[in-house]
Image 1 (cartoon, rainbow, N blue to C red):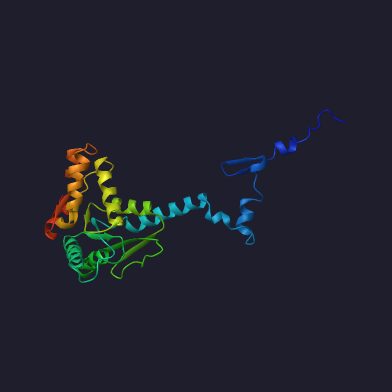
Image 2 (tube, helix red, strand yellow; image 1 turned 180 degrees about the vertical axis):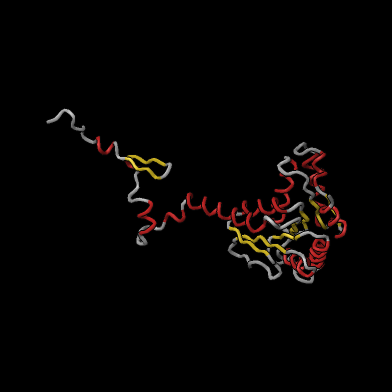
Length: 250
């Protein structure tokens, strides 16, 4: 027997698989090759639900969003409740704001849904402005409203949030629920931490927002959880013209 023969198990120890930059050895080697899995339609399909594939989906959402909105021009986001009924005072207020923003030369970006979002898109569309809806995949979502001119549906909230902040120069926030509050505090945090430069945030509806503003001042700031200057990160008004002026001024 040759002295150069491999010891038992040596072949198994050297078993190695290279998948692009990834190296797998021993028990971590997966059967087949990438080409084989791509071309073999009878193979397992679990891989489409794995994290590496999700990364590509996330990347594609950023690419689609950037591509669709890159040439949008000046824009303002309008947030508010999807449950606001057509004809209600808040609906007409949002519609008036959308119209005013369009007349001032700004595109209107909303979450693309019904309620206050639809109203802002409607106002912009009726005035000949650009009406944008950035929707989100939800089990109960009704889809983009009919007044959206440019619409994108996202799978991931964080990609959608990036588009809101990147392509708007400010937020107008009407009465709304958890989704509206989420966008509001996202914007406040980015401004507070200076992750974005000048970014006006205007709350429309003093009766609705008054309790939150009081709590921020009398509890959050009073207990030192935020600085007194943080109260200046947003404005509150009941006047749609003032709201538009605050969010669009140079």
